[in-house]
Length: 112
Length: 117
Image 1 (cartoon, rainbow over the protein chains, first blue to last red):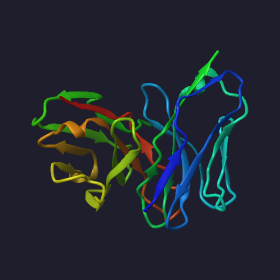
Image 2: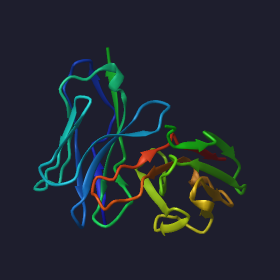
Image 3: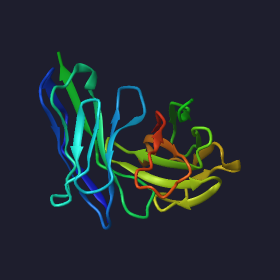
Image 4: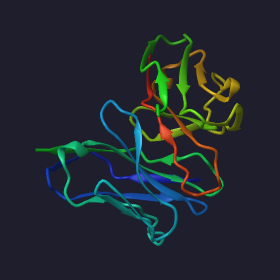
């Protein structure tokens, strides 16, 4: 079956540090890949997405590249801010299905 | 445009009681999904409505869970009777009518935190 594996958190960084949150996946088809973010007290928001191999999704300074050869979709940001503190979820949607399969989430804490 | 709303935001009940969660999707969205996150683990899919029809209910854990979407607007998820392992955060999401594209986006509500004592 489908699965998503994320690095365990929490990840604690100082402001302006470089961020990487690893995400790898297993899927039977050709999935679309997503990163969602949940800020404190809020719902999940779509951060970025990629629908085919080698696509790069980007938003708010965050980037992730769909790597089919390594079945990965790692999230990166060059310089984090305190306001980026949140829980980040990697997810996939496999071919022919509408349901999302999520990873367990990674909590990011950015200190001033 | 209003987002996905869920009610209540928190619910604390005792084992054996009944709880009903409500989700109001974004107006005009045909697709409605229920997910839950238990004990800080991964968010798991429960079921998917297209308008008032259940399209996929493969994630429903057992027959104590009943979801409805009468009239194809809001949806309710009833847990009866509730068990301790049902505690978690229940998310609802909606998306527009699917055009076959791979980049269909689901819009999530803030979730209902359910605690069963």
